[in-house]
Structures are given as structure tokens and as C-alpha cells.
Image (cartoon, rainbow, N blue to C red; front, side):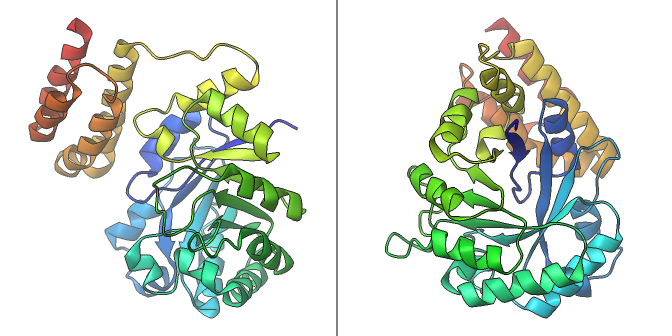
Length: 315
């Protein structure tokens, strides 16, 4: 079976515009940004935050919606409501986010410390929807508590249909090296599909991770920032082909296409602010990148931003 290549959910990044670009580059499946279960249930349905979080282009590929929370009944009710929207291919439960504002509410990776509650959440969500229910998890809370294998077995027994395992503990956040060995142990311990996440930065690393862990696919997170070509590069590597790096002209065109779609969706003012981080990622690795990032952050509109980006073509 061909390994699945997915886009991992990232708050403030994996919106419909970015996802569509990744699908065009060869991504198989994506996941929305995190949605608070309780927030979804209580916020006004016309609130922009949720309209944007749950928006999707019709031409996107399979899209899962990710929810977070710590109370099984809220999680189940939210899953049922999101299922009724008819937009999503799966309900993904976040048990991996390390952000303090999430773990402080006993959600995200805090659930790694309470496997029983995690299991009850999966059971409740599973009973509320006919969609597949998956779990995004880490390998543990800290180095002294790497309980990924037993945790995975618990959520599998509760009814989870698949897992995505980030090979770091919560205390590591995104630092250090991902523990592919622990991901491999999880894969060997369960019968459901397992997607490996962590340190997938190009085609070569994706192939190495798949061989090392035996997983059913890889989830690309930070490796896709400013680099949606990573999905086509992974496909090239899987076929044994040389990975193609995009020329500067293609990077600029893709960045500006991204910007124009953001402007259509959110208006110029919001789009200019949101694209600053993306522009910075798109120019990573280019000469004079520090000064260019500063100038891009000061650009008042996309015409100015494009003029700055075009300077890369004369370097």
C-alpha cells in the first residue's frame, strides 16, 4: 500500500488557502486548525473565528476536523455538530498540543497524563459520529513518562480508528530530535493505522522515517512552512527519483498566489498581516534573508511585498 502523505494541523497556519496549495503539491489528506469543542458549541455561529476555522474550498482533498477539550460530553456533542456540516472525512482528537493555554485546561497533551479520561473521550466521540475517529498524540508528557505504547493501546481499545504520533514529549515542545524508535514501538503495538510525525523535512527524511518506523504514512508539519513542495518531493523520493527543488521564480509566484487568495478571502488588511509569517518562511534559505524579512514585515500592501520578493531573482 502506498504510504499516506498528510498535512499536520498547525494553529494559525493550516487554513483553507494553505491547505489547497499543499493539496495541489501532492498532499493526500489535511486537518483543520484546532477547534475548541466547548467554544464551537457556545460561540455564535456567525463568529468570524469559527467561520474561518471551519471554511474549506470545494476542491480541497479529504479534510479531517480536529477538536480539543477535556470533557467527554462536550467533545461528543461538538463531534456530532461538526459531522452534520458534511464537510469532513474524519474527527481528529487533539491529545498532542503542548501549548500552555491548552494543557492548562487539561486538554491537548495533558491527556497523555490521564489515559482513562482520554479513553472516555474517544468512546464518547465514537458514539456520536459515523465518521472515523482518529487521535493526534505525543510519545509522553516528559522523558520520565514516555507512555506512548500503553496510551495508544488505550485509545485503540476505546475505538480510535487511527493515530498520528508526534515523536516528542510535551516538555520538549518542538525542540530536540523526534524519537522515531518510540513511534515504531507504537506502530508495532496496535492494529490500527499509525501516521508518523516529527522531523519530516524533505523526501529523504520521509522515506527514512517510513522505513524506520514501519508506519502507514507521514504527517508533515513545520517542514511544510514556506515549502509546500515537500509533498511532491516526498512522492519523488518514494518513487526513487531525485527530489526537485523549486526555482526562485516558482517560489515567488507561489508566495504571491498564496497572498492573493488570502486577500480574496479575508480582505487586504488582514491578509497582509497574516502573510508576513508566510513570506518569511517562503524566503528561508535565500541570500540576505534577514534584511528581506524585515522589509517584508514593513510592507503595507502586496504590491510592495512582491517588489521585495522579486529582488531574489537578481541576487
